[in-house]
Length: 85
Image (tube, rainbow, N blue to C red; front, side):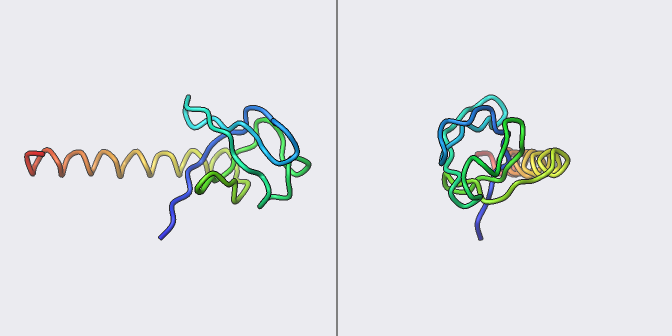
């Protein structure tokens, strides 16, 4: 299973890299799998896996994915509390 995290392009660095905002955490991401910076714009939402943007998604898809992760984290924290961890 692989997990991709949604983020928003905040800056194009060069033809192969962009800065992506993951809810206030900024990381440099490789754009090669999307065809480089000519295929993407500041403000676009992408799914990122191991430092590579793998798909352009809509803002709605990004929001729904982030909400799903939040629900999973909350459920995990509840399980940890029940287990006394």
